[in-house]
Image (cartoon, rainbow, N blue to C red):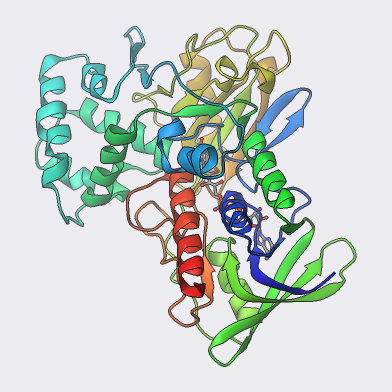
Length: 428
Ligand SMILES: Cc1cc2nc3c(=O)[nH]c(=O)nc-3n(C[C@H](O)[C@H](O)[C@H](O)COP(=O)(O)OP(=O)(O)OC[C@H]3O[C@@H](n4cnc5c(N)ncnc54)[C@H](O)[C@@H]3O)c2cc1C
């Protein structure tokens, strides 16, 4: 095998696989190394008794076909994949109130029990979107200057808790408004048929068909530089421990911030990336016999302290669970480092919300922190995509989503697109 490529990509998560597909489509020779025995990182599943249990993402593409990820997959790469909108935008479960669903973004302000709250959210928050320019105060401070109504705080905390794994006291006003603006412009979430694993499989197949070489069990250990550019990546086969040198014109790292810094430490390179805090959380997988949510939606639980939302992707893609069963996935945030207590309390909240669930319905619970968090950096604190030190070293994935307000996998897709443009533009 030749060890010289146009582009070396380390990390076979969504970010690396998207970059690989976009570059191989343009005729670039790509070598991608993934240290785990599977591709997809936090955007794939493992099968447990017929249930597709996520390694992270709960099968939701934040803006369905309309977002940047949907556009890259369906339009740019023409991947034969179906992404289906959820029927409802959101369903709100307030204590002592019938669940309330709305189909479009603007229905959101009707989620409140009282007219006064609806008016406030509509007039003082949502209509203000375009007026907020650069405000580094937190969204909590911003709301506190306008209202004391606890339900309004709980409402926004449920949204950011589910979508960003953050409390509103951790989000700058500008970031919050970018996020709301994207929800307004690009709309509700969608579920890919076959779930996130199908997206990953399609991307791996795409690069393979376009002469990309994608290796599992292959860990990037260090980089070598000759003067002002990176010249070589040293990868180790995690099964045999054999090491191999890979030379390339461009190097893309899809490793997250901490892992990137570990690689830089082992290399003869003395710069490090800034390391803002990660966004941590957890999630349960349940297998209810009957659907709990009835219609596909993002369910939000504003009165809960821990569990912020849930989805039932089997309402769109039934193959994610055995016939006659469902997959019900929750998401909770950690407000403290006491993961064990947070998990216990979240379980109690779920059983209270859905009394028909019982202990036998629980498939598993996962926690996401340290090197496998929900987001490598909190939304709005992402690093730049392009190294200031080496023009041929770029970064993709969560932790490098750029500053345009795209969140979760939409941000990952945005970053991969920008890096691809940069590499193709620089070389033309
Ligand atoms: C609980 C949870 C729920 C979520 N829900 C959603 C959702 O519903 N919708 C959504 O859009 N987003 C969701 N997300 C976020 C989404 O999963 C991530 O944004 C996305 O998967 C990140 O992709 P990535 O490529 O940046 O990182 P990763 O998926 O972490 O990929 C990085 C890859 O690099 C590999 N790697 C690391 N070090 C090395 C090395 N030295 N050499 C080679 N390979 C290496 C890792 O093994 C990994 O495969 C969720 C995340 C979590 C945790």
